[in-house]
Image (cartoon, rainbow, N blue to C red):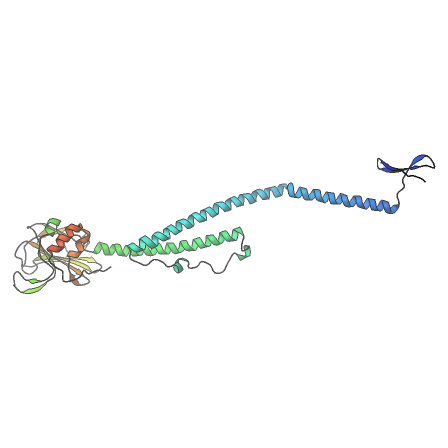
Amino acid sequence: MFHHYIFFMLKTKYYYNPATCSYEPVRPSVSTFILRTFSFLFFSVLLAAGMVRYYQDHVPSPKEAALWQANERLKAYYDVVQKKIESSTALLATLQQRDDDLYRVLLNTAPLSATERNAGIGGVNKYAHLGKDTLIAQTLSKVDQLASQLAIQNKSYDQIISLAKQKTAKFASTPTFPPVSKKHLKRISAHFGRRLHPIYKIFKMHEGVDFSAPMHTPIYAAAGGYIKWIKKDKKGYGHHLLIEHGNGFKTHYAHMDTIMVKERQRITRGQQIGTVGNSGDSTAPHLHYEVYCNGKRVNPIQYFVGELTAAEYEEVRKQSAYQTQALCSNF
């Protein structure tokens, strides 16, 4: 029985031939050679593919490295933009709250509804082509929503400014400044309402308030406006004038001694327009003072509430005896 011993030296295979007592190289068949060559090539390609894949996954190319850096920068910018959007949204919410709870309350007007504030938000997604859940689409949608709400808030402020100007004009024309100083304001000799006329001795409507004061006591304009007319009569109201304040308000000052203004002259609130006198049908120095609201005479006393303390106003109110007509209001 022959025993063949095969071993490898270098890359050539040998076997021991007992007949010749020597080692002889193994001569592989053609099919074996082809199979071995194919196996070698297959595993070589497989190893190369694995190495390329590993290289691609773990060793980026310069172009890929640049793209990764650019992507990281974009993510950082995105975070900054998101924080700014969140900050702007919070600020807008604060402005909306002040608009509804402060400015519109002060101006006595209704706040904007949720429907009005969200008008134009939603609808067709114009960034659908960018992908519904992509960062750029989400960011652009948030920016559009914020811009829409800011535009609505801007219109709201325009409305508030317009209302404030209207209210300011009405406040400025309201006759709240007392026509005589506080110490004379308390000396009411005739109230607003029916009374016994001191000269004619008959009951008739007294459509103003009489403030008793010494001769030459200063008389002040109750609000800004212009002098509509000045009359100097020997009877009736004597020396008297009418101030047109606007917004339906007028004030009438009668039985004056000195008149310090001229017709059509513009005057300011609290400006001295003359002095107390005893002209016309008057039994003693005093100022007869009337307030017109929308063409009707109304009780002037209630307009002084904003210029006096609670105690001062209560004392003047008591001095006026009683009121027969409610305060006219243009607001």
